[in-house]
Image (cartoon, rainbow, N blue to C red; front, side):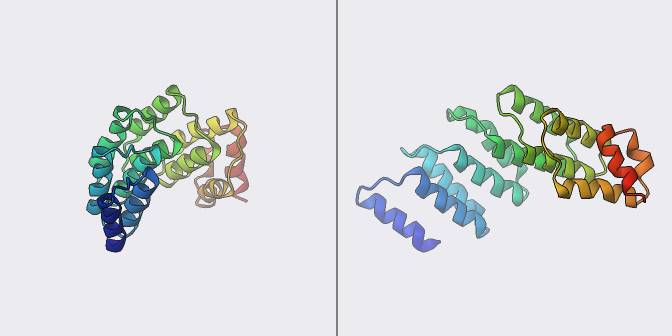
Length: 195
């Protein structure tokens, strides 16, 4: 990565302006190599120069910060997207919502989901299935039921990995207990899993 950074410095010294793709590659490379602070330096440099970040730039940095447990900084960047004239996309929201669920901030994750949809970013099947899986893994079956209903309302398909988690609940003897908490279509999976 240091060679890439030197190349960037050389580009600048001869009057070439790196574009957002160049910056994103650097940020992503540093992040994937565990050099989050170096990634942040490059990200901030991009903000301070003529290089305008894209939502992808923010997603790379937010994802890296969340992965290493720096949620407050990730939240600051998330809030800063709007200030840079950008709008968070489904990836941005997914990163934040998944982290909130992971740490047990369930009301905050629900509020962010509502805000996302209010801002015109509709959840897709992949996102809803991921939310349901995360909630089921945390034992939040009633809340998972709410998102299962959204999958149905939008005529999305339940992914196999999500269905297998529902079946796993039943195989652990939780089928009857959770049957009333889920949409009828999915409570049948709980019953099937007990057989």
